[in-house]
Amino acid sequence: MNKIRVAVLCSGGGTNLQAILDSAAAGRIPAGEIALVVSDNASAYALERAKKAGIETVVADKKEIPDRAERERRILAALEAHDIGLIVLAGFMTILSEAFTRKYDHRMINVHPSLIPSFCGPGFYGLKVHEAALSRGVKVTGATVHYVNEVCDGGPIIAQKAVCVEEGDTPETLQKRVMREAEWIILPQAVETVCERLSKEREI
Ligand code: GAR
Image 1 (tube, helix red, strand yellow):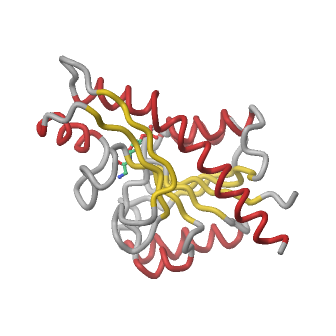
Image 2 (cartoon, helix red, strand yellow; image 1 turned 120 degrees about the horizontal axis):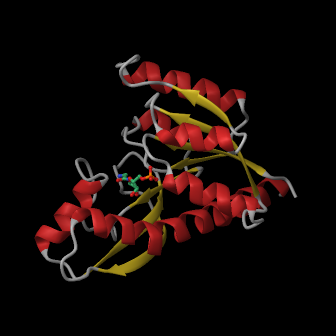
């Protein structure tokens, strides 16, 4: 089979990246090959995880390159140089331009820590999503994997998994549960599903 070369874009701890790397190492992403990790934060722990797994890394640091268009140019050049077929946004904290998202139409996916369309869109990222869910008093939240288009968190949904809110939850405890019970499961599965589709399309 024609493996799809995957790039994972991260800004922080990279636990979702780790879930993908572990799944790939366990043979659960046969249609894909994790070929590159990109970060917009030079001190992201995700970069260490990539190095430990022997994956090439590229940094387009926000502080060093404050202009988003310039960062996107560098990222695009790296993606093209590595012949990337699928981009995975795994805790990547920059909203990408419409021109960028159009280039990777149905070839870029994102994991979001809520059940879209709740608690999503500009301003909803990381712990803020869980703070908003707790202040609204929802009893069920979860995670979503979706294709990325020009609307922030607005692309077609690929997978969702619900997670219960528990009495006494803090944003931190809820974030951990959503990661463990939803994100780390549905993201690697979605990577395989999309790689399989892209690989079949190549064969046609
Ligand atoms: C994850 O919970 C991810 O869903 C979220 O940031 C966290 C990154 O953690 N992403 C967003 O909020 C994007 N809107 P990680 O670096 O440990 O994977």
